Image 1 (cartoon, rainbow, N blue to C red):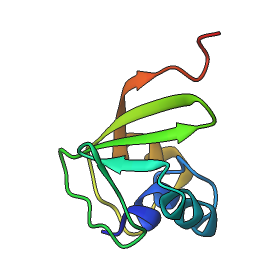
Image 2 (spheres, one colour):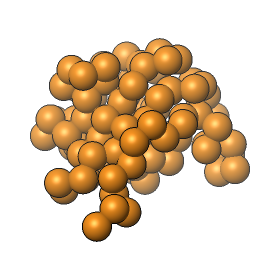
Image 3 (cartoon, rainbow, N blue to C red):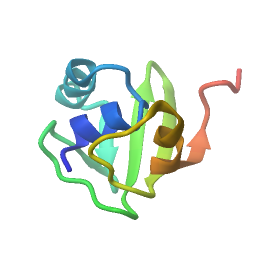
Image 4 (spheres, one colour):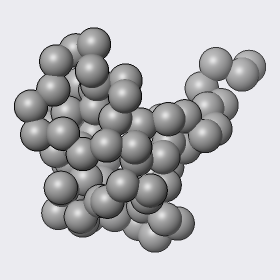
Length: 86
């Protein structure tokens, strides 16, 4: 599954266009490498998203095409989240 679609389906980023823009601005890394919007992700991959100066690192747990809001949280687990640490 494409990284931009995964981030949208998992509800990490609300819109696919915003996820695409984050990738184009080199704010998304997959397994330590800068990801383009079309980069494929697989179960077990680690994704790092940089929101401003605060990174968020997640691990891909599932790849689901059609996701209900309650099920989106099962698509990933948070490895490191510095967003709320001020």
